[in-house]
Image 1 (cartoon, rainbow, N blue to C red):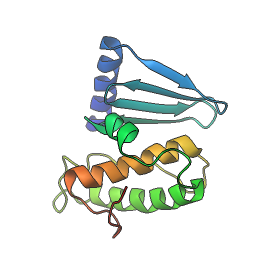
Image 2: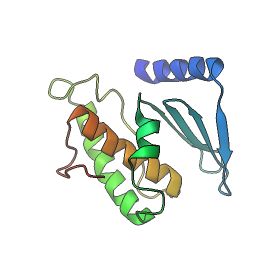
Image 3: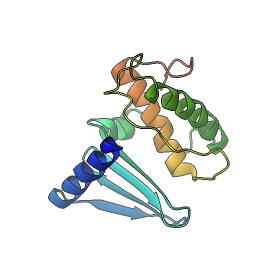
Image 4: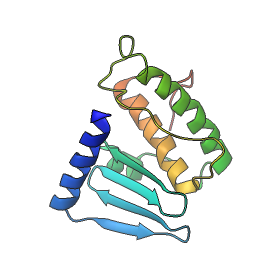
Length: 143
C-alpha cells in the first residue's frame, strides 16, 4: 500500500513540475502525458491507470504497433493473462524481484475498459518484459 501512495505522490510532483497535454476522446477518457508518465482515466467507468516508467512513452510512440493493429478482444485476453501472472508475482516477493513487481493491478475481465487502456496496458507489459528481460505467462514478448 505504501507503494501506491508513493506512486501518487510522485505523479502529483511530476504533474506540478511539468507541462502536460490532456487528450479527451468520445468515451470521456482522459490521458495526461508528461515525458515518461502516462495517466489514463475515465469518469464513466471510474478507473485510473498511471504508468511511471522511464522510456515507455517514447517506446510506445516509436516502436509499438500502432493503435488499431490489434483487436480489443485480443488485447483484453492478453491483458487478463498478463495481469494474472503479474499479480501472482507481486504475492511472491521472495521468488520475484519486489522492485519490479511492486503492486497488484486491479483489472477485471467483465469490465469494458475501452481500446485505449487495453492498448497501453498491453504495450506496457511488452515494454516491461523486453526492458527487464522477464517473461509473463509463457508468451515471448514481440513487437
